[in-house]
Amino acid sequence: SPSQVHAGEAPKGAAFRVGGLVERGSIQRSADGLQVQFQVTDEAQRVAVQYKGLLPDLFKEGKGVVAQGKLQNGVFVADQVLAKHDENYMPPEAEKAVQDAHKKARAMKE
Image (cartoon, rainbow, N blue to C red; front, top):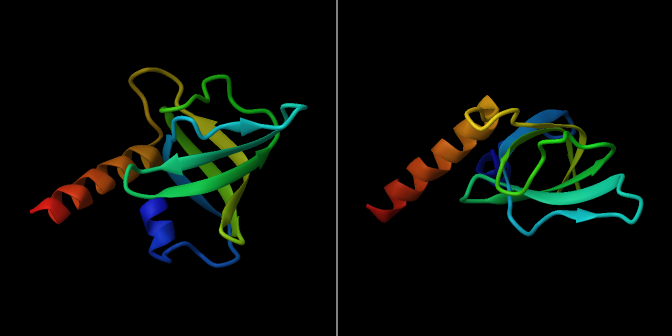
């Protein structure tokens, strides 16, 4: 999750997956449309993601996403991006990241 990345739990120099929601207002596309930058959030933290390639048709702001790649200079450089495939499904990694962030936020309020 983005919170785990910020806590230093992400593997150094190795590929891993980060899951969460595509943060609203964060998608930036290059002129050719093949380069995209966006933020993945678990609603507690966020991770900047950079990806070159075609995105899934269902990739949208506010929707679940899982990106696979490596952290480079504080930016997650993805080699694959997966998006949810229907209204009732969220990739397990994205769902867990959001649930964990909600639990942590509730615990901090208590």
